[in-house]
Length: 215
Image (cartoon, rainbow, N blue to C red):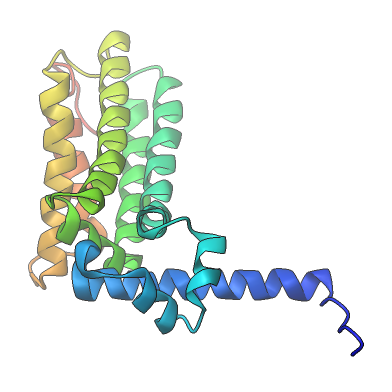
């Protein structure tokens, strides 16, 4: 029997992307419905209409898929914070930092509102024991660390007053987390596009050096 010629490279790449996207969607749905611990590679692969053996061509195990799904949610958040860190480092005074914080709040809130399923998965696993919780906490620690770096740099340059950096970083991240949770729970008193901006403004103004007024 004559062998079939291989598919063109462009088609192969599209097929690979399609399979990975199906696995990502099936994985997110399974993790939301069953939790990280309850979801299985077999059921995820079946839901994606992909053979179990093929699954391992894309992800080495269940944790790798979960980390990938969470990474799609957290990576843009960490990049936004990194970008703000760079912009803030170039600010000459406190007043010039205000537009940077405002832009960061807008980017974060839009991303969170646009990825509500991933945010729900975050809250479901954030305090879980095991690999799923470990993945989420690893991403969260990275954002907390970047926030600390921003605060330390601002203190050194005099654009924020002296304060307990670790405590304030945890309060900022935790405050945003609580507001997002309230929004996801359907609290109609929360404006989705101000969820993060309000927390950032609260700490931005409260940590400004004495005598500095927000514009």
